[in-house]
Length: 171
Image (cartoon, rainbow, N blue to C red; front, side):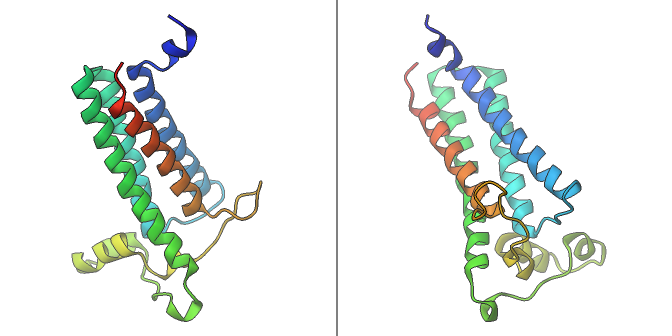
């Protein structure tokens, strides 16, 4: 068995997916705590779906199923990546709006929860974002033109590609 075949075993690919998702969450936590960048509602939803993608892949790595199970885990992980990518696209859309079309900012989610805001309003902020999601507070230091949701979208697309490959592979 070649080295390439060994590192691409289905169980290890699921582990790589999990580790990639864990790295994305670690970067998000670093940006929040060290760089003091407060996550907006759409950022939080993207984190949720990086975690969901990673957890499904980790379960797949632990379970180490046969071909049918690999397909199920691959498709479920891929679905989570698609949904997370949708939230990234929504945030990119908000960031591209002209200033007069940006929705108003809501209070922070923690405040909304503690102050017993209607659940409908909290869910609307989580699923559609608000003015805080349109703010560009950081650009990547290497290329200076990628924003956080654009990089998250790249991550979700890469995850989707690997998940689909994992679901469709024969061995």
